[in-house]
Every structure is written in C-alpha cells, then in structure tokens.
Image (cartoon, rainbow, N blue to C red; front, side, top):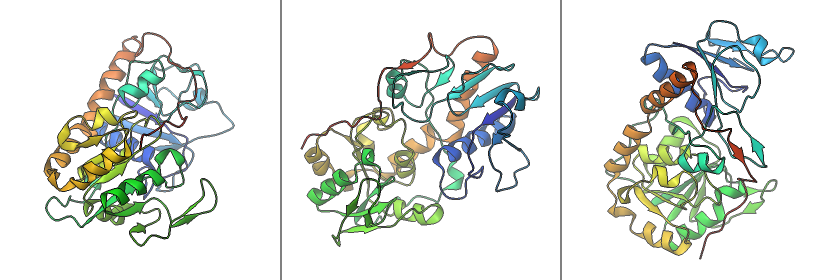
Length: 328
C-alpha cells in the first residue's frame, strides 16, 4: 500500500526534540514501513532534507498537490474537501466550538470520540527505540510534571498542591520557574525544580529517574503522550479521570485516577508500592508504534473498500477545551 501523510507543519519529520504530533506520525510511518508499505509526507518544511517529503505549495489546493501515487491519504487535521483518493483524517486536539467533521475522522481515545459524536478512535503510539532504557529499580526521590506549564488545562498549580500534600519534591518538565505571559505564575519553593522545555535524552533522564507522574489535567485530554512516555520509562501515573485517562490507566497497577486532590496526594504518598516493570511493559505492549500501525491499517482498508469509519458525520456541540473541576 502507498500511504501519503499530510501534516502542514514546519517541524522536522522525524522531529529533533519537540513535536508530539510529529513524533506520533513518525512512529506510525516506521510501523507502516515495517509492514511493507511505502510512505511519503506532504508538509510545509523539510529541515531534515527527508527525500520522502513533498513541500506544500500554498498557491495550490491540497487536491492539486496529491497525484496518483498514493492508495490512501491520511490527513492530520479535519480536511473536508473533495479528493480523488480514499482518505481519513485524524483529529489530534479538542474542538473549541460546535463544528462538524468528515465522516472518516479518527479520534485518539474513546472519550475523545464520544465528545465529538463519533465512534472511531485509534490510540496514539510511539517508536520506543527512540527512547532511553527505563530505570526500573532505583528512581530518585521526586515526582514529575510533564506538559507545557503555561497551559491552564495542564494544571501545574494542582500538581504542585498534590506534590506538597504528599511531601514529595517535584520536577517540572515543560516550563521555567516564572512565566509572565500566558497564565502567569512564579514559584519560589526550593522543593520544585524547573527544567524548561527539554527533549531527547535530557527529558528521558528526568522521567526515568522520577518515582511517578502527576497529571491532574482540567480538560478531557485527547490522548496524552506524557502519560505513555512516563509509563514506558517506569513511572506510575496519578491523574484526573478525564478524557483518555481511563483508556490508558486501565488497571490499578498503573496508577490512580481521581477527581480529588487529596485522594491523589494520598496515592502519591504510596508511590513506592507500584511495580515499575508493569508500567513499562504495559506502555511497550499497548502504546507502541506496531499497535497503532495495525489499528490504522484497519481504518485504511475500510475506506478503500468504500466503508465509512463513523455511522454519521462527527459533530462537537460545544467547547471541549472548557475547564473541568477537581475536588479538594
């Protein structure tokens, strides 16, 4: 099968440091090539000089730029135009307003699909060979936050409160000690370390030496790469039960889900009871690139056969990014 991924990004494929969606698409492409498929990309830039990348031409329509080469086209946003090839769309985020989606839209978790009036979803996966080996026996005495700290939905303040109640040092991955722009904050506590926006080995080392991830998000998380990255590197997860979290933290050996800050703090106090190998093996098995590749293969086969992925056009009825509430 010949597969064209369309992602109008300026980041590299594969990404060098950041780029969550780009990292997922690269993992998917690796799986598809291992399955014997041919894969190309249509993007806005090609900083890696990847020979399989076609540059997007803004003077032409998307349809004009897709020739007869692909058997299926995979858009990574809700493309809703005419096309002479079978195609699917993956929605990687949440709707901010009421809107309709193409009928062959794929979402990232069961709740993500439900919130958009759909039934079709495929869990994200990552190419674990790009990550460090986990530290399964001797983590250091801290827990971590992994997200863009300035994003209110990621709930840095709630994470800090949980760590403080649990008596744990917190390492923040994804922000500096102060932020004066979006969602301003400033924390002086010596029990909180701020590591900025780090990627690669530096990020891996911070995660794999942590005892656990605190993730009390205040929205319906579409998926959450931070969760599976942390689990792969050996960390149990202590999080709110919103969005994709019940799909990922699917049994008690992987962590605790609660909409109560105090319950999460009590769970973090008992972080040492979790078997880090269980977390690692679960992420490796269920959220690797191969599992994702197999799931998308079924989607491609259905649309090539003329089937639809959802019974009707998905439709969000409001702002899925609206803040949700936690209890004390």
